[in-house]
Amino acid sequence: MATFKGAVLNCNECGKEFKVPPVRKDTAKYCSKECADVHRQDGRRKEKFERFCPLCGKSFLIYACHAERRTYCSYECADAAAAHAAPPDHHFYTRSFWRNLRGSVLERDEYACKKCGNDTEGLHVHHVVSRFLGGEDEESNLITLCNSCHKKSHAYES
Image 1 (cartoon, helix red, strand yellow):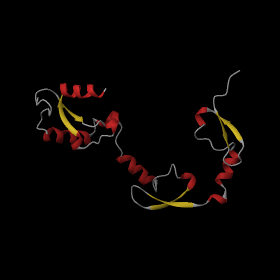
Image 2 (cartoon, rainbow, N blue to C red; image 1 turned 180 degrees about the vertical axis):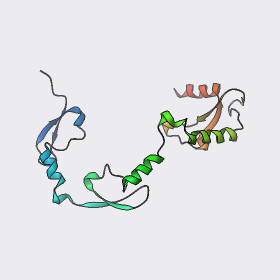
Image 3 (cartoon, one colour; image 1 turned 90 degrees about the horizontal axis):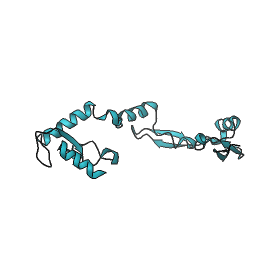
Image 4 (spheres, rainbow, N blue to C red; image 1 turned 45 degrees about the horizontal axis):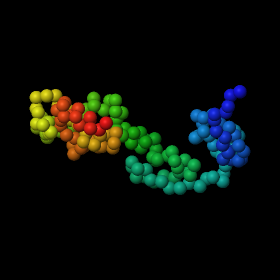
């Protein structure tokens, strides 16, 4: 006989215990569709509170039960914020933003490695504080290194 691997939760509406599969243990709140419908149409839970959109600054009202997942005042602001977020890493180094920033760093460093002075070997623009550790894509966090020095700098990270 197979053992149950899910979770046993209490319904937020009626308090009854119910079982859910492992994939729903963090999101399930109600034991049935009827209890979920009662929650949706419950006139007692109409209190809203004010929140400010981090993008445009506009104030908007939000239900308490939506507070954890609603950050922006509209889909337009949410989409605009997503568009300004850092691009996915697998495309980052091919984007024009990076190519322009890389060019200005190479020019600033006079097309030479800042550690050994080599200007004949392939040059790399290196993040002093790595992106995965929270390093910014700004000139102050970037340095020009030759291939050898770049490999050595990453050898110290591991």
